[in-house]
Image (tube, rainbow, N blue to C red; front, top):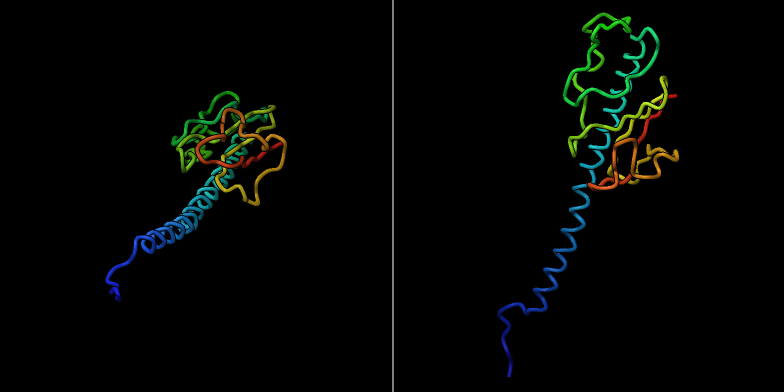
Length: 161
């Protein structure tokens, strides 16, 4: 006696669902990775802009030095015209102090000496070719910036000496 086949078997359906699940997982990685790389590029650009603002600040001081901390994120950083400044009041160092594009926190800044500082950002892409290989970047801390959680891989660091 011959049975007619009108529907898929349970095994066939499970195999198709498993294949779709594997393909979805692969595609998810390809769609998320470009966003992480784009955020990493924004972080690097932000650090370079902060670095330029710090250099402008240092040039405006009678006794060359860098600030002990960065201004609040989202605010403009301008010269107040104090006694230690050579630039006029209102001189703009940076229009808006940038924030991390993922967690909206400030970047790491540590004043090491009057003419030496370190700027850091947490990077999501562990294979980034610009990652620093200095001993401070091996861990997940840079000053008060903790890169050990939130999906971050490494620290991108700029040091001025």
